[in-house]
Amino acid sequence: MPGESKLTLSVITAAVGGFIGHVSSHPDILDTAKEWLHTAREKGLIIDFHVLRCGDDLELIITHENGPDDRQIHELAWKTFMACQDAAVELKLYAAGRGILKDTFTGSLKCMGPGVAEIEFAERKSEPVLILMANKTSVGSWNLPLYKIFADPFNTPGLILDPTMLDGFSFRVSDIKEGREITLKTPAESHYLLALAGSPSRYIISGVFRNSDSDLAAVVSAQKCNIVGGKIAAKCEPAAIFRCQAGFPAVGEVMEAFSFPYLVEGWMRGSHTGPLMPVPFYEANPTRFDGPPRVIGAGFQVSDGRLIGPHDMFDDPSFDEARRTANQVTDYIRRHGPFQPHRMPEPEMEYTAMPIVMDKLRDRFKKIG
View 1 (cartoon, helix red, strand yellow):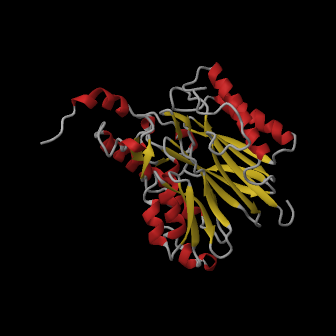
View 2 (tube, rainbow, N blue to C red):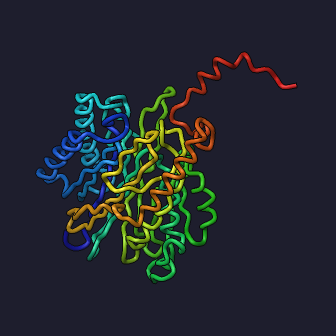
View 3 (cartoon, rainbow, N blue to C red):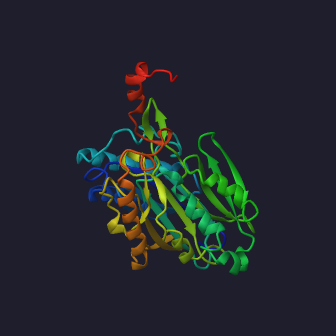
């Protein structure tokens, strides 16, 4: 694309049906998604695409010139997901057609079920991007690495060594319980940012901007589950997009933030805490207690809207220790069984029988003293 024309990179994710429980995606599902997006590319609606999966979550990576939140692009993704869901129903895949995807497209995918991360930018001379996708975790799972990547010089020495990053970055934080957001500027407001971001079940870092020119550096899917009548009506599968190098953190600085398998919410039934394990594509198959939670990284060079790649970013022995630590933490925390902190606090659990239990026991409680 010549000149300063803007490119949009959209990463749209959904769970349409699991192959063997919640472990993986069936090849037919991936092929169905590829067929739909290939047709869209042939018609000129999109420039390029790639289809991946993390666990049982389907990931559509699309480039186009329509801008973020475009109805045509979102409708394309919606129809693709519905076709994949139909294929999943035919194969009797687990949880296929159970209502995670709402039946009627309303013009935008936001709050409809799928996760949406989109970033618009003018291509630089070299445009490396990293797309991270996670499974068995929540939308707040990116808070810790986003802080480390864009505000912590111990992780990202470029914050003090690269003159173009000396002014720091601003963080857009969404309060998903109150439906409001705030922008905090670092390093000046780092402590305020940490006060909020340390509660990832409520405060979600949804975007990061460079202070010097307000250029968008990273964006995440920050939609949260909708609970209707005590049942999950929509669920976002978390994804994040990072622009790298030349005024943004280096590729290695982004990857370094995932060398520590920090604890996240999710895992079995979305109701447990566990370590986020960085894995190559072929190891994104969470089988132990439906976990532990996984993250994969796809690296692309963007060239005139084309996605050159992906490179499997975690297919690297330097992450072996992170995986080993994650397994050790898994052994430790699983021994807690149904007790916190392994089991999440009741208000944060996606699935819980506590209301039923309390209804059965309510009349048997007696006042103390």
